[in-house]
Length: 583
Image 1: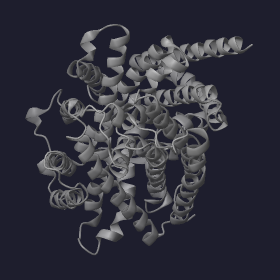
Image 2: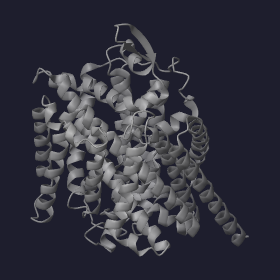
Image 3: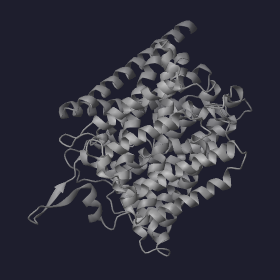
């Protein structure tokens, strides 16, 4: 099967979905084709509520949701074969994920920019708000921990990426000053920033020593923990700054970088015309690998349907929406963009390697050379895949860029690796500080509910967001390997909880639309599907973690499932009360 043909078919499906299905949703379901004023114009505060042009906001939203998750999830899920992974990405994105994101953005904008947790109090009840916010707080700690760990691992594996990523942040600060202090234009300076960024990438490509931390500054004898601490400090600062200072200009730069990167990867696909070397359905999985159904639907969360997107849509994006008519492009279109990234991830780890044997060495069994020179075949277990996923993607995607770089440089593959690593890290960092900002909003809402005034302080709330996440990232260990070695143990918790929040967001949308007598079938069917598969997968994963003795993961899993049940019980009570009042 030709990977370029699969990419073309996927893009066609996404175009048709945005052109026809999203337009119908805009008119008939969410009613955003109006001139109704948005929260950014009704309650501007210069910090969070700031009107932002459609293209700039699309860049911010796209980069906030398109972190490392739509790369890691598909790169793991290919263990079951490329076909189920790609089908779930395409169908899930167009019919579930994009509808979820569009709906969360639209309803939040109509509700004054309130978060989905706050809106839950209106459509379900006050207790549901607290329960939902509790799930969000727990999830966001996991998100911050996992993404800090992933970036730290990439910094260690590809130290040439360190300076380009930090250069981008400095340029974004300068760009924010230029636009909002000096009244300069954003487009051309941001394009120039991308050009300079890639110049730094090329300069650093053969200088790994520039980004390698000396052992004297390692915390707990590992550079991973040191990078985690640095990244959490960055997330704290970035999330308390006004969005116009760093987030908007950096995400605009990132949007150009992502479009350029995706365009280059697709062009490389077109030139190479690579054949899929992975099996459509893999029958050689290790016994530790869980069944395809239902685990596929939580392994690929971002890239198909992600509850975190609803938090971004209602937590930050709705507060910057300039016009209600922009919601379709930003919400539905932003998710389609993430679907393209997930599709690229599937194809990179399915067609980016030289042969089927090369693919099997990364997903079935790898060679191990003993001290005496004896070569043995070591099967790849389920627990190994998380740590391998990002490097599998970077190496596979780098192969797509080689034909574009070969005419200009001799070390095309090495440079391509760093380009892809910088793209991944840039968007993971965006998700990192966006998650910290969302956590601040949720903690402030909980503080208001329980009259804890201290949480109204954005510095205190952000510290509460970042510090526990740091403890999770550092002290969740792979047995016998020490602190900072087990961040990917949290990935199943992230996937399950992400989908649970997606299901609860769909529940809120369903009740909101039903109360206004709008069509609800596009919400109800995904809601039922997501609740069933995610609950089953969550229970299966919980039993596995109990057997493995991962206490932290078990504790989080139990809390998540308990809070989910409580939210749905509250929704059932509200439903019965509404029917009784009608009767």
